Image 1 (spheres, rainbow, N blue to C red):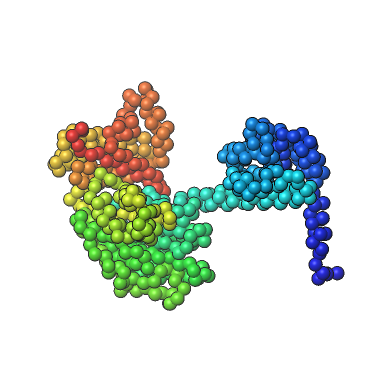
Image 2: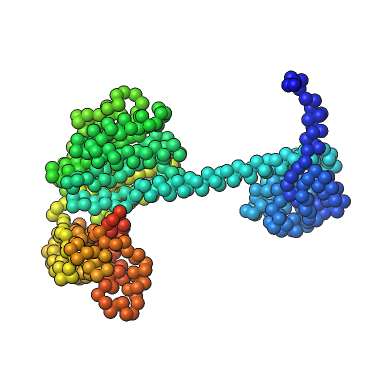
Length: 546
């Protein structure tokens, strides 16, 4: 029968005193009778008790035995309890073990000293056995609770780390190279998982779609929505890209609103579809920060993107198809231009001293970066320079996508090269002549020729290409920087194994020794595997030392 009569407090205290305890307790006291008494008292209630008669041996025992609680007498010769408590706190292997000071001192200053040195509780001598048992029981219960919480946190941390690793594999920052433009990405989630989403999708007829999105909020839910958004975007872009970005965003808006039944979650998005026939980018801004556009080194006003466009993707109010062709903005691809897309983690990064956000300097810094052709990853360089100005870009998910629209006059060679060593040799000679015609020194031009020859020969001999296969080569000159991009659909290379193999004396006599040579020639070399393709990017800077 259920009783509404409250229990007697005395009965509750007696019950707690009689209940069994569990845990390992280290008793530290220089007097043997005190240690024996506390051992008997605590072992009778189920504790495992170990003891030490001085601070030095107690510290060593705490490290080795890892007790759940330490009872420390304050008044001990040589090393007193205060000093021992401080050493236990400073030792990483014992810093989480709770300490109860057992002291005959009653001054508040002495008690404060114990707490400042890391003690969690204190008991005055002579102590009451009931008080000792209650305080030990509370400390052990708290330690057990903290240990369980730590295990839970560790498991959550491992799960988040794994989830973050999987998510980062979905959101690749591998650059993209096409006939008309190059895309570089910098992606920095503020946690293991992030709420930013982005992609570069190749479409039929040479079209491409580039987008970046930012899901509201932080943590696991936005990260899951970002992954859902990427999967849905890939499908909708392939379905509706021919109709333009407004049609794609309408389809995405319907998917997110129907699948995410929570008005707190939505995503800002900027999407751009490039048409190589019309040389235009059709853009759609769904509540996202306006891009930065640089043409011929001069910033172009992009305020129109704040006026046109629409609400974020998945915004819970309004029609399911809120966007129309009139919301789109067209940017002409005239070459020698840069378009920067980014999330508000960069826009709202705060200065560590003044508290001002970085929105005012993004265009300024990006303009500086694009004026330096020797820096290939301009998105990453942008983040580095803003961070160097003391802005905290790690406080939120931060993504930057730099789209470089290539100047056709700077592309000196672009062609598909059949798997034929003689044609590769011809290409190498053409490359040397072409770069010299644009003012590159003879020494650097000779290195470009050798670079093309060795990379091409490696593809012919060891790239796994079929007899009728070819590989794509693009050679660009930007100021004093020679940039070579090669794309092939051969087998994926184990570059480390290949380099070791090339250093073998017998192998060095063959023609395919390119890796060791190209690594020495190029000022920068990047190699990527994207689905079934290998991408190689190399640069050589023409300078006085060449």
